[in-house]
Image 1 (spheres, rainbow, N blue to C red):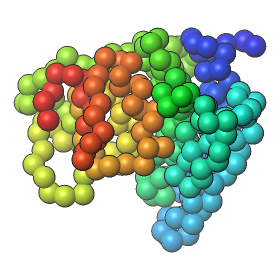
Image 2 (image 1 turned 90 degrees about the horizontal axis):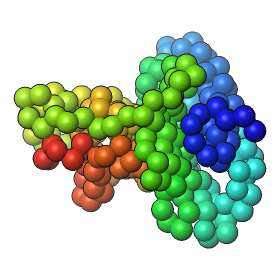
Image 3 (image 1 turned 90 degrees about the vertical axis):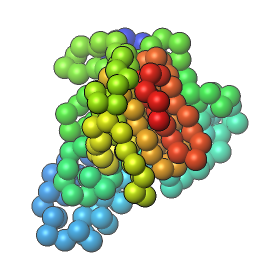
Length: 234
């Protein structure tokens, strides 16, 4: 097959599956824009759209590794016990309000380690991706570029994304985007210097975890999820 992005054949097959699914999501996004007078109707529509993502992409992914399992926030399907695809629509609350800041997060894990990670923003068609021990890249308009975390550490200079429910103190220029998968991708690419979140469904962060680590950052999943460039102390 002709490779679309720099990386393995499996990575490219996963990206093609994402592109096919994203085409449907872009159509759905246009429909959501027409439902803004009824948030209840928009929520129901987006819930059904998320379910269609899982269904539409599953057949494509099983062509990549037929015996793999599947984990999403709504579905857990047993596979061979070795390989597993982890899939989530991150930023669904944004999607509901016709806000284009949402993404599909997709990871391939083997023996409990993430080997391939993709975070794809369907509206601007920008992909962040990584393979274990091969670095993190961004792909847009048929061009791939390797990305790294930032070098900033001073509280007065840093930008930190937050996804927390309490009123804890914050440092730096605080942002709340509503899309954890892209928050992690932006830490990996130096757009943010850190990301602090309440615990999240693993399906939403599995891909972002590898993106951050392969870009030279650090991520800790404890009482809070904290991803940094390795220089910021939180």
